[in-house]
Length: 134
Image (cartoon, rainbow, N blue to C red; front, side, top):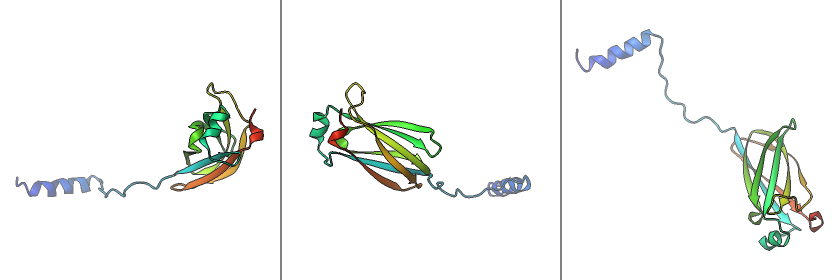
């Protein structure tokens, strides 16, 4: 059998079996978006305030629109921003500054519900006033 004839026969056999070959449509659209949480201490972005407050870590807890926990995330206080990838939907979150042992150093700051749209980033800003520290 000729080498040129084999691909034709293979294609005819696949077509007869009902197999249809379609090109790859490419990557699926992303259902993931990002919330970037930015924080200040008493209205300032100053890493020295994290040290002075003995609060090296920011803890963020995210819940979905039904109130179910989505996850807990930690970031260095001195970064003053953290990004969390979430599926499209509505969420709320709360944040607390923690000491080196994981104990709360501040009252918890609640964030108003926010909507994540796939492929986009939403910035949410919060502040820990001096009165929030224990």
